[in-house]
Length: 152
Image 1 (cartoon, rainbow, N blue to C red):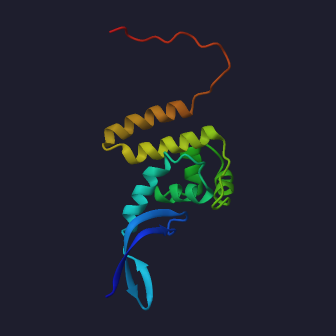
Image 2 (image 1 turned 90 degrees about the horizontal axis):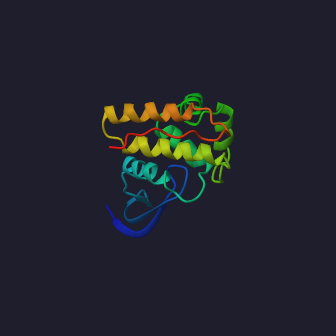
Image 3 (image 1 turned 180 degrees about the vertical axis):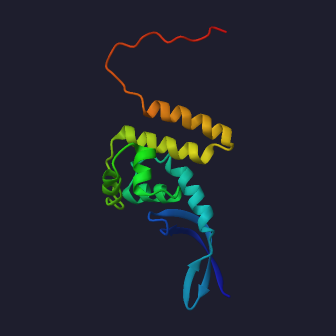
């Protein structure tokens, strides 16, 4: 089997471009194919999406939803607190920015980060309790009242 190494390779199998370095390519039936661990690439990509400086694209939103194995309805209700039609509209943007409300995008990125960075069920449970509490809050324009905290 013939092999070669490409210094730079762009993988698009997840729906959006991912730049890989030093990829081993193998010759199969006269065509060069990357020898890669797609699951590992997906795991790295999901972590990086939370901190990507650019707005999320429709394909990236779809990748996030499918990575966590959620239907449109479940993702809409449990993650972004929007209608499933709004999520479908974002996904139809394909490789263009969704232009979803920035607060929703921040919440989605927070959700992604914490889903992939929390290690124990207890940590996960505590985070989701607080996440749900914050998501369900009704914010007002009133002057804030002083917050009570313990001094020591």
